[in-house]
Image (cartoon, rainbow, N blue to C red; front, top):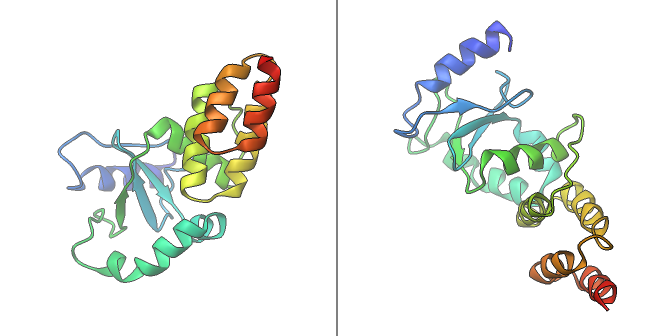
Length: 171
């Protein structure tokens, strides 16, 4: 963490977003040049860039364009640096993985089926194909080793082709 990041983190940790302790996500999501902060349900702050979110996700694009009036409103929670803070329902582990798949950084290896399902759910929620595609491929990688769980996850997300292949592996 650079001293600028440290100063930014010190400034942000004094935010009135919550009575809970707030911590910063790992690099690169602790940079001081972000123009929006996503706050995970476990109170980890992710300093992000609206342009990357908008390009990567039509849901974020709509949310940020529709919410541009909201993000300039006085009612929106802000850091002491004036950056809007948006709470999200995802926990920091899944949000971090999701964001690393969106951002131009080294891509994480996701091999645990529960994590694949959770990240796939977030990718679908935000309609982020750069997340959905690799998570679908990761799901496929488990077809021969755990076809029942793959089938269940595929059914949960209405992924008929994957569910069919999982069912075939079960027979």
